[in-house]
Length: 343
Ligand SMILES: Nc1ncnc2c1ncn2[C@@H]1O[C@H](COP(=O)(O)OP(=O)(O)OP(=O)(O)O)[C@@H](O)[C@H]1O
Ligand SMILES: [Mg+2]
Image (cartoon, rainbow, N blue to C red; front, side, top):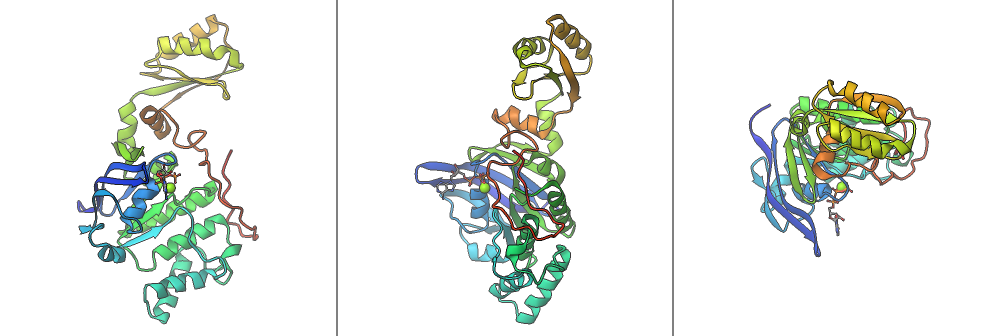
């Protein structure tokens, strides 16, 4: 890890017609690290990544990759970067190996070099056995890995990953996390967008939380959690009728305003320590609320996100998938599972 800035974004602006997608975005990514850009649907993540990877022009502001001005010299930036997009860009009719060789040829590698690089990457991404099969028979996780492999044909110094695990099941997601961690260990700088708070928590050295096309918070996962401070007391009730009265009790005894979730029969409130617990249980007993479960939690990034934006990162909160569902994949008997988005 060095102190060199690999990606620098200052005041980046982009509108589509009258609609502002980026409203003065600032980012700084240190070389050799993973930087997470965390934001809900429509926050501007893909727009930022497309500008940084020269696929889209900005309306204003500054963007540099390894000191090269992206807006002024896109052709000098392209050899430095790789991009794996939100939707895997693989050719369905080609086999895994052919897909990678094709990318190699697009980058003007000699046929033999392209073939060797394809074999190496298929091996690395656990696709060697499936190398001879058409990509349309691949599961969601396999496609994502193939797409990522394609972005690495030229061993780029800086890699942009736009929601690399959206729609993948937990096991495929963890496989992808290991791959990304390995790349960074080998010196690649990764800028990764995600809606999964857990993903940012696991992978990112630093996180920029964005909403409405600008950064609303920045720091390590711990920094962000500290920002909203304290623990969180969560109480689950037997019946929904108790929620309003319980929320009033928790707001009185806790360290902030309690929030209630009707469908989960749950009320939660920030607290400054476990001492409050006995008093809360006593007061809830007095109002006749039946408690099913009590938990004291350290803040999660989800709480951070709620506190910062007033809404969850993904519909349904942490662990829930994004609204969009991956297209159905044909099952192939592979042990790599199709991405299922939890409701
Ligand atoms: N080609 C386009 N034309 C018009 N509006 C667009 C276009 N692309 C994006 N937008 C709008 O710009 C905003 C930012 O979109 P963007 O795709 O960058 O968000 P995102 O953070 O990647 O969202 P998601 O999590 O859904 O992928 C959104 O409000 C979106 O509707
Ligand atoms: Mg996007």
